[in-house]
Image (tube, one colour):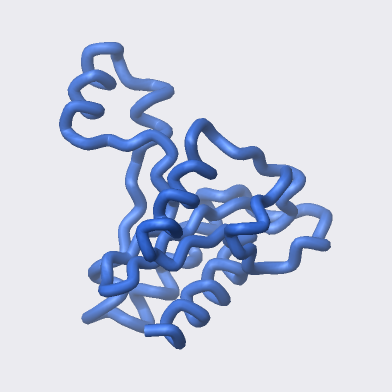
Length: 137
Protein backbone atom coordinates (compact mmCIF):
# COMPACT_ATOMS: atom_id res chain seq x y z
CA UNK A 1 0.00 0.00 0.00
CA UNK A 2 1.39 3.39 -0.99
CA UNK A 3 0.64 6.60 0.85
CA UNK A 4 0.15 10.05 -0.65
CA UNK A 5 2.75 12.47 0.78
CA UNK A 6 0.00 15.11 1.11
CA UNK A 7 -1.87 13.00 3.69
CA UNK A 8 -0.15 12.34 7.04
CA UNK A 9 0.01 8.77 8.34
CA UNK A 10 -0.26 8.02 12.06
CA UNK A 11 1.03 4.78 13.52
CA UNK A 12 4.11 2.67 12.94
CA UNK A 13 4.55 2.30 9.15
CA UNK A 14 7.39 -0.17 9.69
CA UNK A 15 5.23 -2.66 11.64
CA UNK A 16 4.79 -6.02 9.93
CA UNK A 17 3.02 -9.01 11.38
CA UNK A 18 -0.17 -10.35 12.82
CA UNK A 19 -2.68 -7.67 13.69
CA UNK A 20 -6.45 -7.26 14.08
CA UNK A 21 -8.62 -6.52 11.07
CA UNK A 22 -9.69 -2.95 10.41
CA UNK A 23 -13.21 -3.31 11.81
CA UNK A 24 -11.87 -4.63 15.15
CA UNK A 25 -9.47 -1.66 15.33
CA UNK A 26 -12.37 0.73 14.62
CA UNK A 27 -14.39 -0.76 17.47
CA UNK A 28 -11.40 -0.29 19.79
CA UNK A 29 -10.98 3.34 18.75
CA UNK A 30 -14.68 4.22 19.08
CA UNK A 31 -14.95 2.43 22.46
CA UNK A 32 -12.03 4.44 23.85
CA UNK A 33 -13.31 7.71 22.36
CA UNK A 34 -16.80 7.21 23.79
CA UNK A 35 -15.43 6.18 27.19
CA UNK A 36 -13.08 9.18 27.47
CA UNK A 37 -15.32 11.80 25.82
CA UNK A 38 -18.90 10.60 26.44
CA UNK A 39 -20.46 14.07 26.25
CA UNK A 40 -18.52 15.52 23.33
CA UNK A 41 -16.33 13.77 20.72
CA UNK A 42 -17.85 10.42 21.59
CA UNK A 43 -21.28 11.73 20.58
CA UNK A 44 -20.12 13.48 17.40
CA UNK A 45 -17.81 10.83 15.94
CA UNK A 46 -19.27 8.62 13.25
CA UNK A 47 -18.42 5.89 10.77
CA UNK A 48 -20.31 6.05 7.46
CA UNK A 49 -21.40 2.55 6.43
CA UNK A 50 -20.69 2.93 2.72
CA UNK A 51 -18.71 -0.17 1.78
CA UNK A 52 -21.10 -2.87 2.95
CA UNK A 53 -24.08 -1.16 1.40
CA UNK A 54 -22.39 -0.98 -1.98
CA UNK A 55 -21.06 -4.53 -1.95
CA UNK A 56 -24.05 -6.41 -0.55
CA UNK A 57 -27.03 -4.18 -1.31
CA UNK A 58 -29.55 -4.73 -4.05
CA UNK A 59 -29.11 -2.51 -7.11
CA UNK A 60 -32.20 -0.40 -6.32
CA UNK A 61 -31.06 0.03 -2.70
CA UNK A 62 -27.63 1.23 -3.80
CA UNK A 63 -29.20 3.80 -6.14
CA UNK A 64 -31.49 4.99 -3.34
CA UNK A 65 -28.61 5.30 -0.86
CA UNK A 66 -26.52 7.28 -3.35
CA UNK A 67 -29.46 9.62 -3.95
CA UNK A 68 -29.75 10.07 -0.18
CA UNK A 69 -26.12 11.16 0.07
CA UNK A 70 -23.97 8.04 0.32
CA UNK A 71 -20.50 9.06 -0.85
CA UNK A 72 -18.00 6.59 -2.30
CA UNK A 73 -14.71 6.63 -0.45
CA UNK A 74 -15.96 8.40 2.69
CA UNK A 75 -13.42 7.93 5.46
CA UNK A 76 -13.84 5.53 8.38
CA UNK A 77 -13.84 8.10 11.19
CA UNK A 78 -15.38 11.53 10.82
CA UNK A 79 -15.80 14.07 13.60
CA UNK A 80 -17.55 17.30 12.58
CA UNK A 81 -16.04 20.39 14.17
CA UNK A 82 -14.72 23.83 13.19
CA UNK A 83 -11.84 21.81 11.74
CA UNK A 84 -13.26 18.38 10.97
CA UNK A 85 -11.37 15.18 11.73
CA UNK A 86 -11.37 12.87 8.70
CA UNK A 87 -9.47 9.63 9.19
CA UNK A 88 -9.12 6.57 6.98
CA UNK A 89 -8.18 3.59 9.10
CA UNK A 90 -6.02 0.77 7.78
CA UNK A 91 -4.63 -2.28 9.51
CA UNK A 92 -1.64 -1.83 11.79
CA UNK A 93 0.40 -3.75 9.19
CA UNK A 94 -0.62 -1.59 6.27
CA UNK A 95 0.73 -4.13 3.76
CA UNK A 96 -2.38 -6.17 4.64
CA UNK A 97 -4.64 -3.27 3.59
CA UNK A 98 -5.58 -1.74 0.27
CA UNK A 99 -7.14 1.50 -0.88
CA UNK A 100 -10.80 1.09 -1.75
CA UNK A 101 -12.45 3.02 -4.56
CA UNK A 102 -12.23 6.80 -4.05
CA UNK A 103 -10.87 6.68 -0.46
CA UNK A 104 -7.73 8.61 -1.31
CA UNK A 105 -9.77 11.13 -3.34
CA UNK A 106 -12.05 11.68 -0.35
CA UNK A 107 -9.09 12.35 1.96
CA UNK A 108 -7.48 14.77 -0.49
CA UNK A 109 -10.76 16.65 -1.02
CA UNK A 110 -11.24 16.82 2.77
CA UNK A 111 -7.74 18.24 3.26
CA UNK A 112 -8.27 20.78 0.49
CA UNK A 113 -11.49 21.88 2.19
CA UNK A 114 -9.58 22.51 5.43
CA UNK A 115 -10.20 19.29 7.36
CA UNK A 116 -7.58 17.46 9.39
CA UNK A 117 -7.33 14.51 6.99
CA UNK A 118 -5.13 11.52 7.72
CA UNK A 119 -4.55 7.79 7.53
CA UNK A 120 -4.30 5.80 10.76
CA UNK A 121 -2.67 2.42 11.16
CA UNK A 122 -4.79 0.62 13.71
CA UNK A 123 -6.53 2.00 16.79
CA UNK A 124 -3.26 3.26 18.27
CA UNK A 125 -2.53 5.24 15.11
CA UNK A 126 -6.09 6.61 15.10
CA UNK A 127 -5.71 7.74 18.71
CA UNK A 128 -2.38 9.44 17.87
CA UNK A 129 -4.12 11.25 15.00
CA UNK A 130 -7.05 12.22 17.22
CA UNK A 131 -4.69 13.67 19.85
CA UNK A 132 -2.74 15.61 17.19
CA UNK A 133 -6.04 17.00 15.85
CA UNK A 134 -7.24 18.02 19.33
CA UNK A 135 -4.01 19.92 19.92
CA UNK A 136 -4.64 21.96 16.76
CA UNK A 137 -8.19 22.99 17.72
